[in-house]
Image 1 (cartoon, rainbow, N blue to C red):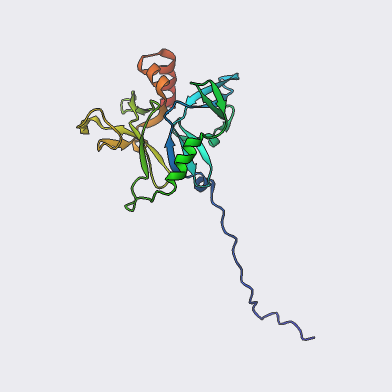
Image 2: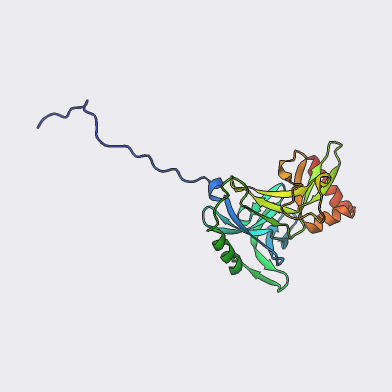
Length: 227
């Protein structure tokens, strides 16, 4: 048998394995169906109590790049997907709650699934603009820390979903406003997360406690903003 030629190059081709999408890519938000019936996310927070569940209003229901449908809510300094809340010491998702019917449930409502399915056929804006904008229905506020180290609360007028999957809270520059009340799409709106003074999002009931000068809420906010 002829000896094998060690110098002869192999004709075999090396095919690299396809890279798996990163977690960020898989969790990219494609579309949002706004929540307008007051449904809530239930979560555990063992630092506050090991015996209670807490409820927070849902902003909307999102279709992610990996095909999953999840609840969204403003959470600290960003937008949280319910699947992100996994730590019982800082917030662990425990399903959903309908306060009007006093009913717990675990699946995305069917009418929101239908809306997300319909949105899947929408073409992306050719100019690279945002995918959609919808009003804030849950009384979200943004807390900003000014140059004088004093905080202010700005109501979120609407939310814009950008093509990169970022959901931006839109607040008003009152000096540029010409129409009142200010509605979604107004030219005076800007993305609050892009403001260097932005620190946190707060929902309606917390924002109103702070506005009313509640000592506990105000002290907690001051500690957060200065941390």
